[in-house]
Length: 177
Ligand SMILES: [Fe+2]
Image (tube, rainbow, N blue to C red; front, side, top):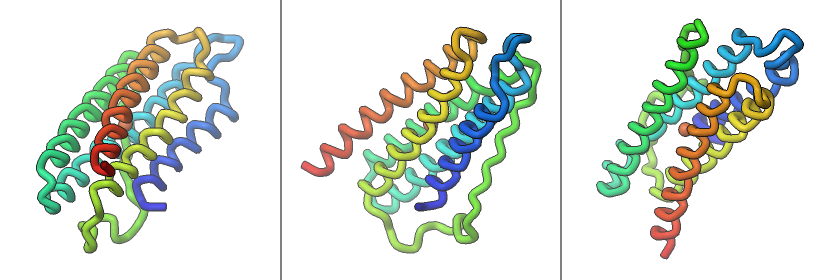
């Protein structure tokens, strides 16, 4: 598994484990501290998405795939909007947006020496988004009908990610045909 997918999967597992260990809704109502923790995991996930799309933009440019490169750039912008949406909710709940983007592999700061195919980049994005959405669905389920604002935020982000995934699938089909 590559570094980005590894990191997104780690974040998704962290969401899963945290919800298991600490219910978001208890007899006292919604525990904002726990919700803020999960929002920060989502924030980090989206920051990783921004970084990944930016890197894919550079890789596509290097391949002279300028149309695809432009698409990656637009997606980076859309993911950055999601970072802002999540950060705003964290602040509304009285928390601090803390997104820690760390890629564990030692060679992650170097540009891939062997150019990767456009298809490989898009597949990486699709898988990473699916993994991220899985975590967001768990948060929605854990919140139930409590904290409708956070719930709606994640529903909105999932809808955006689904739209993005559909567009990407269409691009992948276009590449294959
Ligand atoms: Fe994303």
